[in-house]
Image (cartoon, rainbow, N blue to C red; front, side, top):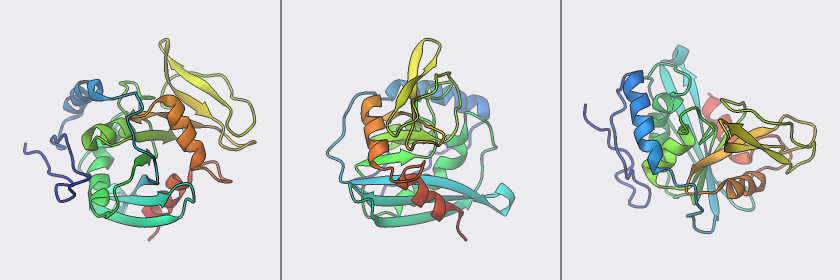
Amino acid sequence: MAAMPVLAHHASMHAVIEHPWNLSPAEAIALQQRLRRKVDCSDRLSPVHCVAGIDVGFEDGGNITRAAAVVLDLPGLQVIEQAVARRPTTFPYVPGLLSFRELPAVLEALAKLKTTPDLILCDGQGLAHPRRFGIACHLGVILDLPTIGVGKTRLCGRHEEPANQKGAWVPLLDRGETIGAVLRTRAGVKPVYVSIGHRVSLETAIRYTLACTTRYRLPETTRQAHRLASSS
C-alpha cells in the first residue's frame, strides 16, 4: 500500500507524516493509537492572522466526498480564500474513524489554497475522542499545524451544563481526564464541544473558538466551510 502524497507542492503546508488511507478499520485504529502519541497539547503557534475552517459533505449517495476549506482573516473574519475538492469515498462510515473517510478530500482542498493558515478549526473532535485522536488531531499531526476540534455533538465523556452566557464553559471529562470543554458560544443555544487538535492548549482553543464566533452558535470558520461543502 503506497502512501498517498499530499500537499507536496506547498512548501509551507505539506504533510510531515504520510500514511496509507486504504486501511481496514482494525488497521486504522492501530494507526490512531500510534499517531496519538505525537499530539502536542502545548501552545506552539505563531500569532494568528488567518484561520481556516474545514467541513465535509457527501454527494451521489455518499460515493463522492466533497471537502471545503475556507480561510478567514482574524479578527475581521472576512473570507480570504476558499477551495473545494471532490474525490471518491473509499472508507466506510465507522464512528470514531471518520478522519479516514474525510481527510483525503480535506487534504486535497487544503492543497489548493495559496494561503497557509495559522490555525485550522475542524468541524469535529480532537482529543474528545475515545482514542484521543479525532479528525482535528489527525489533521494537525499530519500537517504539523495548529488545529482545534469544534464538534456540534458529544462523541464521548460527560459534563455538567455550562452557564447560559456566551463564553461560559465546563470541562468535558472521560475516565478522570479533561478531554475538552463544553463551551457556550451564545446565550440560549446548545453549547459546542471544543478540544485540542494539535499545538494548542485547551484554554487557547477556547479563546480562538470564541474569537471566530459572531452571533451564531458555530464559529464562522465552520459556517463558511459548511456552506461551501454543502452547496451545489
